[in-house]
Image (cartoon, rainbow over all chains, first blue to last red; front, side, top):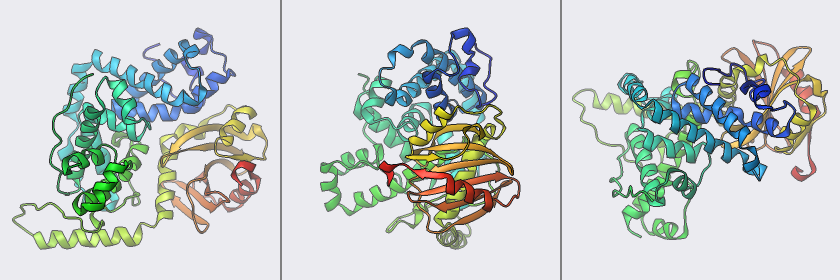
Amino acid sequence: MRGVRNSGTETPVSSFDGSTVGAPAGDPIVRLFESMRPDLLRFAHWLARDRAIAEDIVQEALLRAWRSRDALKDQAAARAWLLTIVRREHARLYERKRLELVALDDGIELEGMPSPPGPDSEIDSLRGAILKLPLEYREPLIMQVLGGFSTAEIAEELSLSSTAVLTRLFRARNKLRTMYGLTPAPDAPDSEGVL
Amino acid sequence: MNHNEARLLIGGDPHTVPPELAEHLAGCPECAQFQREMTLLDDNIRRALEQAPLSMAPPATTPATVTPIANAPGTQRRKRARSWSGWALAAGVAAISMIAVWTLRPSDSLAHDVVAHIQYESNSWSSNEQVPAANVKETLAKAGVAIDMDSDKVMYAHSCLFRGHVVPHLVVSTPQGRVTVMVLPHENVKHRMSFHEDGMSGVITPAPHGSLAVIMQGNENVDAVAQQVQQSVRWLPSQT
């Protein structure tokens, strides 16, 4: 299924080829997945920093979710469950294409981005600065702010201690804080212990 | 709790204040100021993340929703080594901050965020498959509303994250053309507001709970269709 991109959102789940995986378009679980696709795509897009890659990630994640749909016991938890699958799919891709993604890091020119002088460009500058954050800081920040995960949930997902997650989140925000010309807080003590 | 511990908690999650942190903040103006700044920053981070990453962003034509952190009471800007025009820069920052305060009314910001959201899901306009009535009902029910209209007119129905809340995002086929409807229970507006932005025309109207946004492509007058949509929306009993 790789290489197939979801060009339209009108049939987001069926576009992962329901005929192949046996997902009827009217299936409630398909409808549930479909309703969350925009969120998943946005989440993946911030992780991968590339729309096409994000679409591939979501495509693959939806396939995995469909295959593992029996594991979803509570549909109220579907969003967090799907976001977790998307994150893991991104992590797999990141591991596979680490060199390429590092190259992409280098390609993003923060220096060329507008400085933050005015309100018109402030959000754009912030978006640029978030993209420039190293993945170790960007990932928990996206999980917390966009995904709604708690510190404990992020810690479990990333196999870190809660303190380590707080440290990464603190450093992420502290880096963004300097963009505004605010005095950065003293750095947090290193507590990157892996569970 | 010492300063470093307090700032780690604040930086880790500015919107969560456990009792021990609250106690520290009550007696520490510096950390309290840090918490205010980080909370405002976090609001902007959330708004930034709810839009597409920069590479996908349409060119900004209107001010974005920005909380001017620099205006937070007591904020101390970092000293920078500038060999020229230090005063001019300071004056510029002050002027821009004033402009931000006086021109970025919440309603304008809301319209901008709505347009940015629709642009990100631009495929929603071109959907040609009718959304089953059950899907529409389910999507709307999450926001505590129902819409009395032919279900075969709904071409797109998603639950979307918008300003930190999951809201219904519909595209409805009308005689006047495709219309995007977003139910925004958490966004209160005082007055009906029309806007034209990035090739879209829309209105945001007050609703019993929050507001309704109705948007069309082009420079169409959406007042009539917005009125129809508004009349067709029913707030479910749990919301009233």
